[in-house]
Each structure stands twice: as C-alpha cells, then as structure tokens.
Image (cartoon, rainbow, N blue to C red; front, side, top):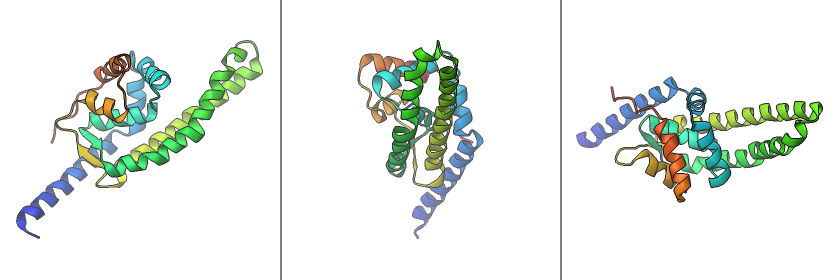
Length: 185
C-alpha cells in the first residue's frame, strides 16, 4: 500500500476508534433522556412526531450523532429500515392504543391501569429502538461520516424530510437545546 494511502487508512481507523470511544462514553439512552428532559424538547419532539411524521427515536439518534460531529453514512441509513419497521409494527400500535384509552382512563381505574402498562411497554419499545440505532452507529466502521460543513438544522431537516416553516422552527428549538460537540482530542 503506498504511504499516502496507508496514512489515510491509519487516520480513518484512528478517527473511527476515537469516535466509537466518544459514542460509547455517552450512550444513546442516557443522551436521549437528558435531551428529552430539557425545557421545550419534549414538546418539540411530539410536535415533529404528530405533525411532521418524524420518528422521535430516529430524531434523538441523529441529534446524538450530530452532538459528536458525525452523520449516518450509507450503511447506517440502509440499516434504518429494520428500526423503522420495529417502530411501525411495535411502538406505534402501543402508542395508538395508549392515546385511544386516555379519555376512558380518566373515569375507569382499570382502564387507567391498562393505559399505564401500555405506556411502560411503549417506553420499552422505544428503548429497544434506541438500542438498535446505537448498534447501527457502533458496529460498522463505515456507518458514520464527519458532519463538517453542514449545519445541524440542515442535516436534520434533510434527513427527516422537513420543509414546513413551523416544523423547521420546531426543529430549531430542539437544536438550540443541544450541547456543542466536544473538541477533538
């Protein structure tokens, strides 16, 4: 291998190792809980979910990656189909049932208890989705690309196919809650 090619490969391998270390140092679940708990973030996520059709787990995963200065590469994007199927077949039906039972849960204690069970199941389904998303980023060396030269807002709006001004404004609110990426070491 010519020296320049070897050097580029070594740099790429080193960068991948550093990035993996950063990502494993701040697991997606903890990041998602912390970000979601910040003022305005829950409302922004739910607005984007209900009005923009955005999967909140995917949104939080993309924010986690951006927080570390990377974007999903082609192999990670391809792997999203499995997670999207999980969300569609498991998480979304639990959410629909939970929401549908809300009015009745206000007057029937048994229904309220069932609704709480569904809420816990929905949260576990979301946690599993986040585990799968985290694996996409950590298991394949080609899964991530540097996020240099693109704003977080543009990267997220494009990936999530958001175009309406209200959705972009809501996305801006969410992005304002992200911590700046860590400095390279």
